[in-house]
Every structure is written in C-alpha cells, then in structure tokens.
Length: 58
Image (cartoon, rainbow, N blue to C red):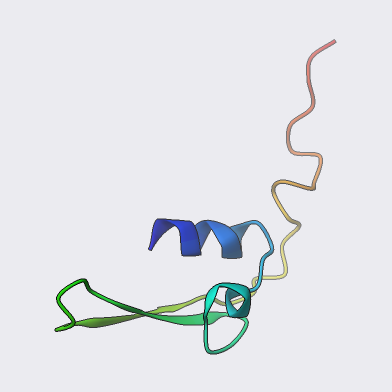
C-alpha cells in the first residue's frame, strides 16, 4: 500500500496503477480474503515535491 500512497502524495493519479478513480484504489491481500480500499482526498495544498519547502542553505 505504501507505493500507492506515495503516488498520491506526489500528485499522481491512482488510475495509472489500476485504481478505480483518481483517488481510489482497491488492494487485495495475497490470500484473497481481505480487500483494502485506499481513498485519498485532495486538500488543495501545494505539492511538497514541487514547492519551495526545501531551499539549500547558501
């Protein structure tokens, strides 16, 4: 589930990795007994990786 969460955090689209919508992906456990649904919601914040959160000290 961690790679799916990271794709959303970096501004990605879960449909590109098999999600049912941009912010929803169902993940089946290896034995097929449990289905997890990862649902994200857009908070409208600036993207951490593209923003100016980290500026090297000069």
